[in-house]
Image 1 (cartoon, rainbow, N blue to C red):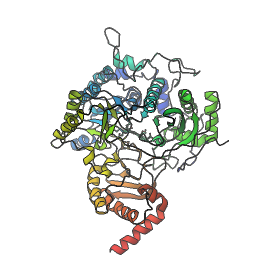
Image 2 (image 1 turned 60 degrees about the vertical axis):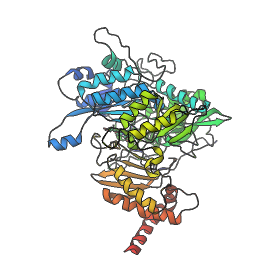
Image 3 (image 1 turned 180 degrees about the vertical axis):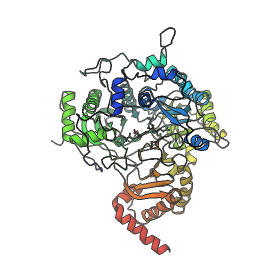
Image 4 (image 1 turned 90 degrees about the vertical axis):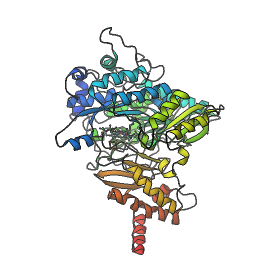
Length: 600
Ligand code: SRM
Ligand code: SF4
């Protein structure tokens, strides 16, 4: 019986330490925290602008990170530090209302640095929130029925789901599964509610956010786990972050192969009959630690719709019990699977689930839709996918994204969906709303999706500097300029309509998923990048490293000869990533060398 399929990946056996090894410091903070309470409440009330080292780890599960603006620190001189916070909203499937968007826009202006950012996992991030504004910020987010709980930390993060508002059972059912997964894996600890939402005087909390219908007291889905408060997670939660997504073979817009756990819907006669389960995808890499690697997920098994939650619970519990708790570098599910071996992992999941798992359906990813531009929903209404370059919403002299969104959300009040490509869909629009929407966007000089070049549309950049403490190079502030140059070169080559994914990150952690796209640019050091090629739009294959330590101004000049070669030698219908993959590292370098000799 063929049970599992290994996807091509660079995966090497991980150097996972035995479960007897000393737990990492973060494990100790979690254990001592009494279900994520720690001393957060006390430290919130003290006079300092930040939290202790221990609490900086714990606050992540509450949905925020302590940061500092690195530009401000540089300007103020060595030693000058001032903490501020990034606060992330968890939004399953990226579904939100116009009212919720208006409130997030208000919060970014009143509490933060006046920008709001759509993330690569269909979430929203506020930056520059001072400690004094944290409680109000989190309360407002809950008041509008969103939540920050589990947006970060060693738990299941935002569940991604294809956001297309197609009026069919398939999309509706996928979005319901996203909500169910989000509810099932939301932490049950009262700590979050006590610290952020409980009214000090009345002791009541009336503003609990989360997916529709979320009841944090509901524990019905669970088997034995040995912890009354957190029946799935236990007292120390997961060894590391955990990520889930739901997509379709013909539309992998959520990058299923880059998640710890994904459900690929199998559709027959317009209904979901089951899901192929993918496990162990992840992007993060530490160049100095050879034991770390990016991986596309393994194809694990097939489940019927009523088995999906139970199998997800079993997989998360196997990761809880077998994931590495002494070395956080190799604690993600991809390392647990590499360490156990895929058949043993599957057997353990079957044991936890209590039943054998069925063989995979042969379906695999074949396409990817970014849902950008005008589309019909199938109910007489339309949606418009607006490409937001690297997801940042701001107002300046040239473009007023926030003003446009405010006007759209007030005048037309459409429901919204965020995409896994840092963009936004305005949905349920009537035919007569179409011109109004475009008029508002034009009035505020927002680039329309149809006016954006193909290369920009399929690009993504992570946050990086100035707020990300892990950034070694620029990303969202560097990629737009590179694309300006690349657009000119692609037009000269007649490749301006070519669809390929170009993604940049400011460090090797991979927040814009740069290791499974056609061309990945990964920050190596200040102003220098590693160039990866050979992944593809559908995201089921890792790319490979072609050049290292390339200065910012040399990145496009390195890409142009590769695109020339692609134009000359591609096979009919071949994509850029498939071409680079077919040629391979040595052939690409040999061609470029030859080309450069001829050009001299
Ligand atoms: Fe990420 C850490 C931003 C999606 C892999 N990520 C961070 C932090 C919190 C930096 C930190 O730990 O101090 C970044 C905050 C920057 C800032 O100033 O806002 C950060 N990650 C982001 C976002 C905002 C990028 C974006 O431009 O959209 C995304 C938020 C998604 C959300 O709404 O939840 C974001 N991060 C991702 C993804 C993509 C995905 O999940 O599909 C990945 C790769 C997939 C994966 O998890 O393997 C990703 N982020 C990481 C890692 C590496 C994890 C690893 O296993 O090695 C880190 C570092 C870490 O965890 O130690 C990280
Ligand atoms: Fe920060 Fe690195 Fe993630 Fe970019 S990839 S947001 S630089 S952690």
